Length: 304
Image (cartoon, helix red, strand yellow):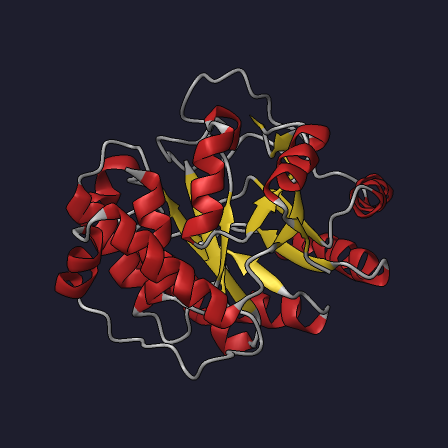
């Protein structure tokens, strides 16, 4: 199961901390479950309307053929996964998907490309997509792999709102799941994105064989970034909410395997954003009608 989180433009209750230690994060994980959820829910209410959930849609604009060896990713060319490499979608195809997403209730449109890093000529095409989606009145987010400082500046110029680049796990466990890039490579790209003035969307994946200390390390790293990114699993969400109080905490891939009760606990623990639609890049996702029925059952509504 993956989650991500991102910082909004306004922090309602003062500046968040950026000096969380692993010992402090570990102590939060060790709290009795009712106490942890209670604290997380309080922090959530201090910073957000707890009845609102942001609806996002994610589209794979360039599928398969990635040269990286991320052990969890079906788009890696290093593994036989049945996912075929495809060319970058054309502009009109992307905008048609964005219009459909907006009509379905999404306020944010995310575009992902299976690249190690984008070529400049491809980046220009992505910028056209960003400008087209923004013209529809939607927030924009892209995930394109590693960026140089100049590429981040170009994305800022075209009006990109958020850049997604996940840390995936702790620094110690990272080498167990990825060998084609380093943890510092990830941090460097996040630095380029922040320096360009683009909001950061960053998170990780729970359930890859990592230990509790790895979940502690991932949260501690995210919560100690100069600017907080904008996301047992429910405990991880609750600790993310407490340590990054003003961040959007988003449920991403893996939600189709979660019961309604588990998702309800996630919302109670501070999750306030989901990806909406039948597919996340190449992974299945709950159907739109099912999501809307669940939100209605819980008394939640889409964030404007």
